[in-house]
Length: 204
Ligand code: MN
Image (cartoon, rainbow, N blue to C red; front, side, top):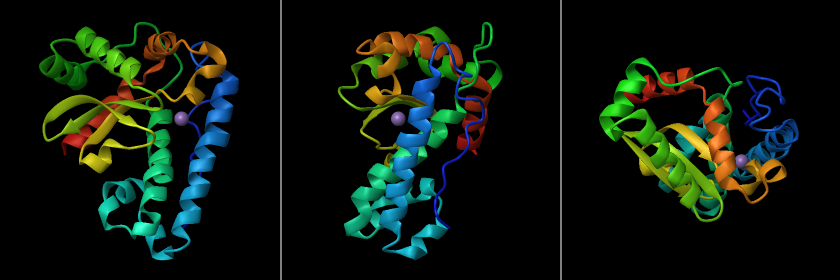
């Protein structure tokens, strides 16, 4: 089975004004689609690998044939990362913050939600060049980390439950060089319910 572009769980303009419609459309239909096309192209050399979902492929890079490992790392990583990214966003809701288990776990690991948020923002801002900031689960702990290009925490045996794309293609049309403004705006559209679902599944 070829990998296919997942549908967005909302309209392209649903994240306005924080992420603009044009950026969302290009990001989803051009950038994400290109990662999928290139992943499929690489896997055509080893069709048996089509039976694995993309997350297991990038969790097991060392076991892949050497001549496609880098293509899967980059394009499979791009597919996996963006598939998570679309889901952990939603149209802005008033005063949306983590609740319940997620709130408790963030406080236990980072002191409070506000200090988690500050540390995550700093990590996203400090990521030099293209890459991602992540909140990942390792064992029973949560860590904030960043990766370069389309590398995934899954390749480090960690499970990402929240991720922020800081490639320029994610924000340049609206924010140009102002990555800090994009990061600040993005907090308004985080889908905390989905992050909690991701947390519960990662802790299983
Ligand atoms: Mn992207």
